[in-house]
Length: 163
Image 1 (cartoon, rainbow, N blue to C red):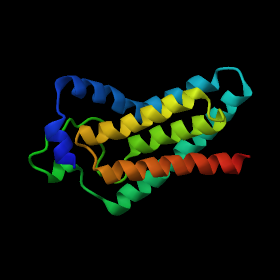
Image 2 (image 1 turned 90 degrees about the vertical axis):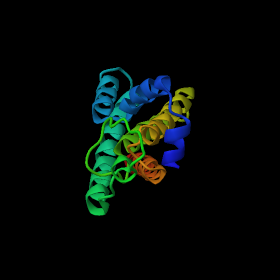
Image 3 (image 1 turned 90 degrees about the horizontal axis):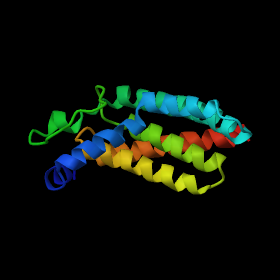
Image 4 (image 1 turned 180 degrees about the horizontal axis):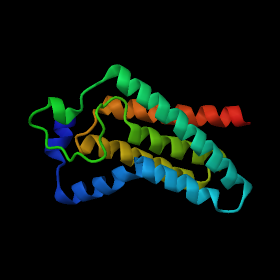
C-alpha cells in the first residue's frame, strides 16, 4: 500500500501540503498548542491543557517503549523504489509518534469540549497527519493505525481518570 500511494498519488503540490500537515503531529507543535491554550481564560481550556499534556506524555512514553522494543525499519529503509520525503523521522517506524500526538490532541479536544464542532476539525487534521506520514514514505499504514489508537486511548484514559 505504501508503494501504491507513493507511486500513484505523488505530486509536487501534495508534497508541500503533506510536509506542512505532518508538522501538526510534531512535538514542537503539540507543546505550542498546549501552551497556547493554557494561557487563555476559561475552565475548559485549563482542563484541556492539563489533560492534553498528561495524554501527550503517556502516548509519547508508550510510543517510545514500543519503537525501541519492536525496532521496525521505516519504509524508505526497506523498499528500494520508494520516493521518500524524510520529514520528522527518528530511527524506528512502529508506531507513529506524529499520529499518536495528533490523535491525542484531537480526542482530548473532543472530550473536553463535549463534541463541539471544532472537534470534527481536529479529528480531520489528525487523520491528515496519519495520511501524511504514509504519503511521505516514513510510515506503514499499520504504524499510523497503531499511533492513532495509542493517542486516542491515552486521551480517553486521562479523561476518565481526571473525572
